[in-house]
Length: 161
Image (tube, rainbow, N blue to C red; front, side):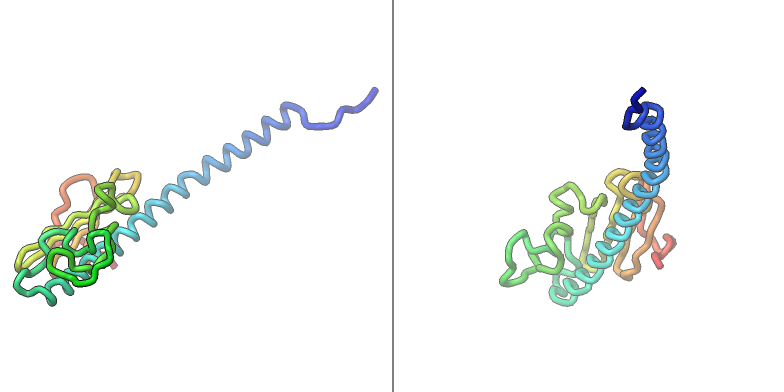
């Protein structure tokens, strides 16, 4: 009798089961790593907005802080002469909140007046694209709160360290 070469069905099923077990262990770690990367990007975006707001306030003292996030950007084109309407201080993706789709899983908002500003980064999908919301006011301290609701940025919120 000739011996057949190859794998039996049982051996193949065992290999597939082992691969599925390894995938079940690895996928949650991959998702957590993606959330951590998105949160790091959001904190960095808030820091960038803080720096841009200080520059805007220094360059346009009559205007105060920028009225909207889009005023800190370049309008999507080369900015030969910065103005209070397009200050050319941050990249256009951040300035337009990714065209309304967010950036790295976070949605950015910013409101400014003559003496104050308020910037926020909230997860596009809480729990999936991020777990924490980040915010800052004119003291330029980046703070975070658990996401999933209104994100009041007050001095009582936890500073990011």
